[in-house]
Amino acid sequence: MKYNLLLLLSLIIGSFMPIKANTNTEKELNRLDEYLERKSEFDNKKTRYIDSLCNRLSKSRSLQEAFDLQMAIADEYTLFKSDSAIVYYTLAYRTATKIGDNTRQLHARLQRLRPEVIAGFYTEAFDEFRTIESEPIPDNVLPLFYQSGYRMYSFMLNAVQSNIPGWFNDSTYREKTIFYRKKWVATIPESEPTKRLYEAEQLASDNKKIAAKMVLSDLMGDIKENTNEYAIAAAIMGHLLKDEGKIDESIRYFATSAISDIQCSVKENLSMFELSMLLYSRNDIDRAYRYIFSSIEDAASCNAKMRVLNVSSMLPVIESAQRKEVKSHEQLLMTYIAIVSILLIGLIIAVLFLYKQMKKLSATRTKLKQANMTKDEYMGQFLELSSIYMKRLESFSKMVNRKLQSGQVEDLMKTIKSSKFTDEQHRGFYKEFDHAFLKIYTTFVEDFNNLLRPEERIELEDPNSLTTELRIYALLRLGMEDSSKIAEFLKYSINTIYTYRNKMKNKALNRETFEQDVMKIGVID
Image (cartoon, rainbow, N blue to C red; front, side):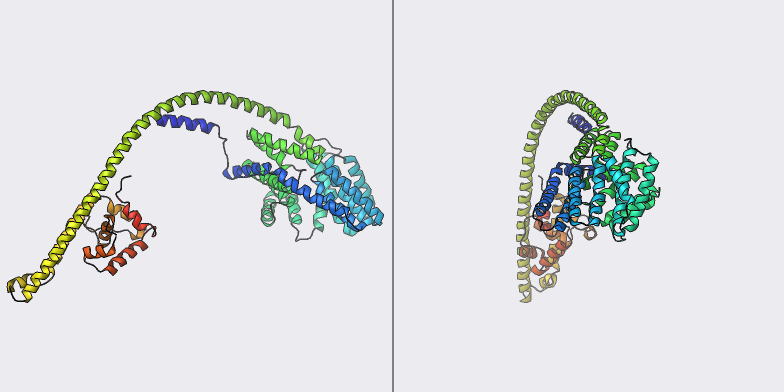
């Protein structure tokens, strides 16, 4: 009856557990859940750092220092709060104008394009880019120009691919993205991880997926997880695996990317949204619901209008599925409550029955312990008497030997002059001892061998006769712990007994507790 109850309880508990398709993927999702709970911790850290830069800006002593700090603050805000980034890039542009530095002005204008696109100022951003494109651009600013072009067009390409309408068709965005990416990557030093990252993206775009994955795997092994490059690399890998139909692995990489975004406080991100879509397709509605809300929260915090629109379009679908799942769980829960109530009654009856059985078992154990103590006591008395017998026998032998040496009984001297007589008595006694001991402790040899390393286990030539080592530990098991008494009993020197005991300890699985473990052989708990 109790086994049926346990089976039913297992089935009930198991039905509440989600199906895990892949252990590594589930571990990464659990890790993401932990980081989501800590998201405010990373955001506060980011805010404190920006505040420290603002504090330094308020104390700046030159326009050049003010410009550098304004640009640094804007960089920190770009993927965190795009509208604030626009404000500080504009301030930096005005500061550069006061300085009269055209290069600094151009830097501020180009850097401002990215947060403008993120914030939804598409017309302003593209008009500004075309204006800059028509102007002479210094060679040292070309890398930033190419990067800005790539950032703008790749953003719009992602938007079009997400069914958000734009000005140009898909192919225009793709061509421009590829053009500016190649131009930009060519200017990046070979030692920079960014070069490998966007080379891998280009390989993926060229459908050279195996090469792209190799570059990304190598890159992710070289850079830290708490960097934006790592998040992008993991996201690209997630897209490649998704295209190959390897959904579990794709989910794992998108989760890794989302973790990296959280660590960097990147609010303009796509990995969390992609992850929620994949989990929705796998019917993990609870996580999909939580992740898409996190994605909307990030996009709103960053003022990323296109990302908000993109993510919000799927929210009603996932929210509806989530409500259905909650309702289904509520109905299922009521059914389980009824079943558990019935099982609880059965369990109470089973517990009462088991309680009675345990009382009987406890009484039986008490008797067995008493029998165990009695057995040890009787065996000890037997050994004590036997030891006395052996001492007397030895004394008798010495006395007879003295008389024979005195010439009192010549023929008696011939009979027992050697130690053969006592040796035979000892051997006879040991044989009887072995027989009696093994009859009481029937599994002693097997249990003793289980305490030794496999290659050191003892094999008996005669199953009814103990070896010297086993006989020493048989005496130890019977309470004769003093090596001098064991030596006297077995007619060995104390050093020999010590040697045997140390030798066996060295063969044990656990040298420190070996003799205590021997004392537990045959004990009934």
